[in-house]
Length: 396
Image (tube, rainbow, N blue to C red; front, side, top):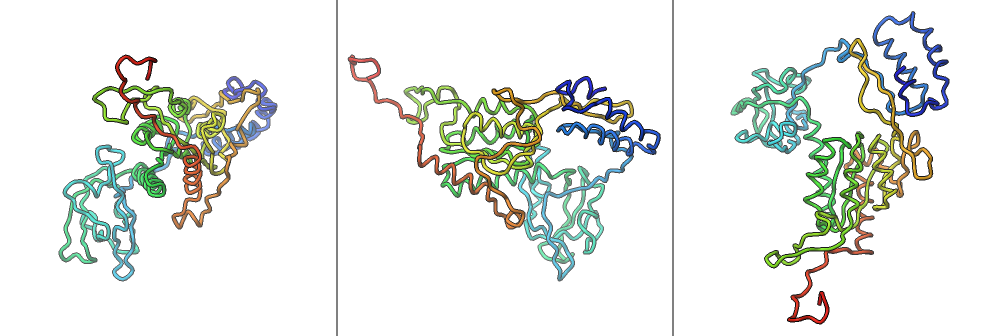
């Protein structure tokens, strides 16, 4: 009934919805568990061949979730000793609880290459893994024993508070690594902004990254793996601003005048997308092309823009979604759904290249933005010279 009464079009994508109901109803007597019901409901809504048709069982659904502590590091095994050392310690933004890095807290003095020898007094040796030893330690004060060499002699024990989730920490490292790559490749002329989704986190990341780089000559907007949401037009409102004039004052530093409209980017832009840019990540990719902001680079997007406004709860704690909204163009044709957005420049990030640290899509975006800069250089107009006495014409 939820799909029948709220699906974005009454025609139900051409499916005889009552016939579909009868087709799957014959399976109901054979349901032995909530897993079976969830599976059948999933098959049922799958007949619509539509994105955002989700079916969930009750929260947890009887599963026992493991509390796993994480130290914000990559480990490396020393085969000779059977001990683990910290191959990489991810830098954190320790003022943000979601982005703190446990081993970088003040006073700990932990370095890459140090060995993790024990957790809460239990000695760690291969084939045990650090993850096994850190079960049930997330957000709990935990004693770890470390040393600069694979020996308990001279080791020291420190108190840390492991994370429950490293996603923000690792994403920040990816963003900063890409920003530095772009900065180095362009001698500081081009900025880089990554948008993980089109919700509150995506807006926060946009503000955090965009405004400090607004005076660059070029900008790369990266929406690969974007999880969707609904704020694309809030971001486009900033990206589509056009420099119309300048204002200045006597005591401002020369060249630091305010733009009209305020905080407008005046330069060349490119965007990167891929097959994992979904929902409003699809829509952002589509309208980046519609607004002609610059080349869209990468791979065809996910292709799901018939969206929802949350999940409908069921009586047992499960839920279903109902796609209520869709997108169409000025030619009155549906767009993107079940196809995705074709980039202007197709570039495949091959898995073997990715493993080696190569990012062909980002490399091509750098090339394209620099081409635009060289072909059409943009800069803020300088302040006019001081006026002479009694000028003949206004503005001279």
